[in-house]
Image 1 (cartoon, helix red, strand yellow):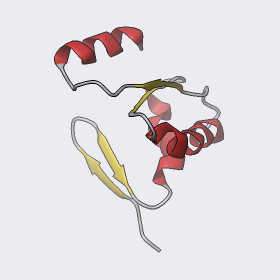
Image 2: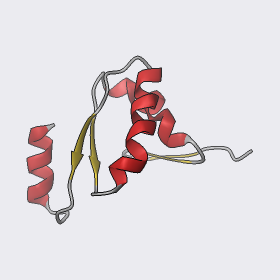
Image 3: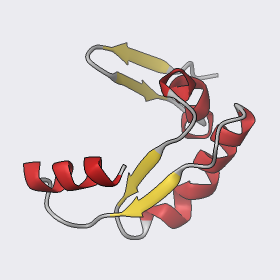
Image 4: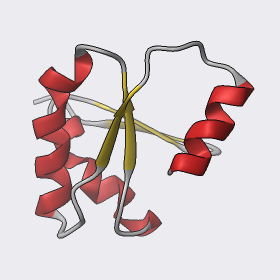
Length: 83
């Protein structure tokens, strides 16, 4: 059985089989809602796993946003305001 790998720093990086469905556990200390960014096509594969992970921790279902634009400071500021 593979164990999850957790890297700590300014943020967190968690990697391992099935860890995406357990994001609620890692993020619950931040609050009760989440704003999740996806690129086009990814949301179909991952959305259900993330929602299940949040509901398992009694958190609100996350808000999902599709973004396929460039990673710029302006885009980050705009999305932060939306969140």
